[in-house]
Length: 455
Image 1 (cartoon, rainbow, N blue to C red):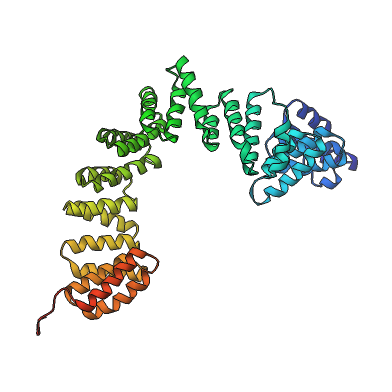
Image 2: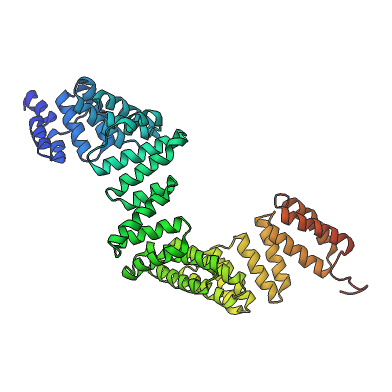
């Protein structure tokens, strides 16, 4: 085989690659181009095909170098410079993001694309340069782009601290979002710019025309919730949930609103409804953190109101959903102790200890449970184990102090007092308590005075 034929095979089919690229087949263009081992030796046509093919495939990092080289070879080609800028912008992730953005801004300037320059200045947090464009540029005909301009103008003004213009800028951004309409963006902008009234007014007007529009009712419910108008939000969210029973986001928001309004106006029926909703969500999606947090809060609310059976029922439900959750398991175990559900409580603690045998809080609470069963010596050993794992654990220190003081072990009491005082220095309430323990130890060294000769 002659050397000329070998070189031709090595270079690939450049004309075929260009044709494939023009036909919108970037992968075929790369296949026809073949391997380009040395960009320094590649001609301009090869660089353009290589860079544009990678860019159209979404492989922006691979596209940057050939496009940058091609643009440097032909600086007057504005389309090529713009493609290089876009490739750099698409590559701006991770620790080299700032460098890519700097190159993108340089290429966008070469391309003469002021809109792209503004977007890149915004990404670089050069808000003054971005605002200079967004403030004076004519509104784009495309409504989505017009909303982006309005939003970024508002955010630049806010970032630059131009307080007198912030409200007007966010109102304009909300109006631009509603012109699409993009309710999600309008909602976010309204509360970011503290102009929720504008959004609520628009939603009220829109709903007079189409009162059964689910999305309008949803976002009015969301907006009323964010404006702390919980009682008003309930009706909107109930409307959405009734028509879309599997709309977990709306259902979770309704659960939250019912809890808030229930706590504010002491409406027990709201708590019962929220409990039902939370369970429905978690049954369908056990990983839904919002619903989990709502039910956990509700259990705490019932516990504080001394409705222990109701609280235990919720905690039991959560335990069945996730028996490995330590926080819920500790709460459920403690409530089992309060309700004298010994077998259930022991099963909960033992199950958690198999998973986390060295968790100080778990061992401490298990020791309290054991102590409540009259196994004081075992409990003391467990609390001592806690201090081996966490020497400044205030719960274990106090439990050991109390156990020693109650049995008249004065040497242990005297040893624990300075440890407790030292460990509690950053906790004001606990520190005051340990100072009181120190004083009590002085005038009452033990809960009872052992008789002479007593064992």
